[in-house]
Image 1 (cartoon, helix red, strand yellow):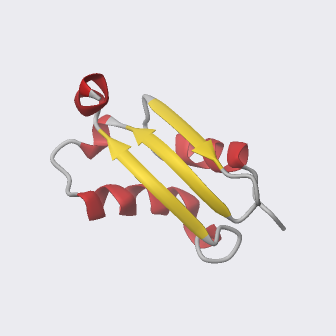
Image 2 (cartoon, helix red, strand yellow; image 1 turned 90 degrees about the vertical axis):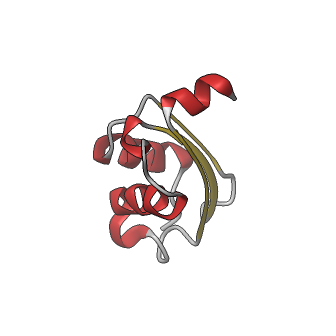
Image 3 (cartoon, one colour; image 1 turned 135 degrees about the vertical axis):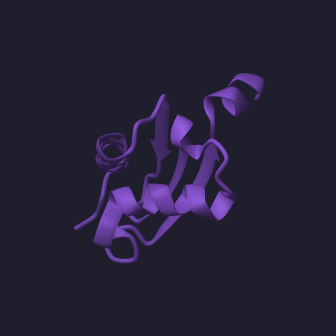
Length: 80
């Protein structure tokens, strides 16, 4: 069953305190997301991505074939 960008956005928002989440993807399996969260402070890139992947659980690799992530702290986003 294909996923929708809005479904992924809601899963991320439910699983992680976020200031901003944007998800794009038109084919139902490949997505791009921008996630801004204070939880990323003092975390390396891989740790940030793991936090996001944890919100999606088993859907990663099954319903979601690929997810390209941009993860930023609020301070990083303000300077972007």
